[in-house]
Structure formats: C-alpha cells, structure tokens
Image 1 (cartoon, rainbow, N blue to C red):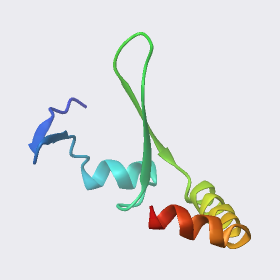
Image 2: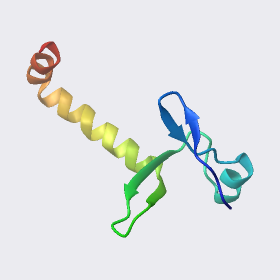
Image 3: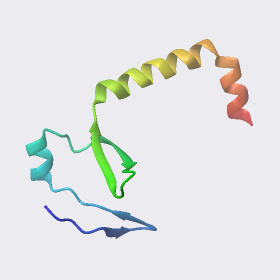
Length: 76
C-alpha cells in the first residue's frame, strides 16, 4: 500500500487505515518506534505495551529510590 505524507501542523503525518491496524492486530492507541534505515528511508515498528509497562515500572522505582534528587532536578 502506498501512502503520501500529509501536513499536520508544522509536521508531516502518515495516516494508517483502521482496517490495516486491525489486520495487523494493532490497537488504535499503539506506540511505534521509528528509526532511520542506514541505506535510506524509515523503519516503523509497533512496540509491545509490555515493554512500555516495564519501563514505567522501572521509572517509578527509580523515582521512589531517588525522590529528593528527582525533585531537585524538576525544580531546575
């Protein structure tokens, strides 16, 4: 399937049809990782929510362990 970039504010966007998301088993609020292919072009991959949940859990632990430091950084 070919798609054209569309203007979205000061950026550009690619619209992914709902039918394609459903066929791939991807929810409408899914996260994606975008990287630049060394030989040119972009690589777009969906990211499993479990990895994001693990990241959030570890981030909360880090904040709890270093609460004072994090607060000082936030105040800067």
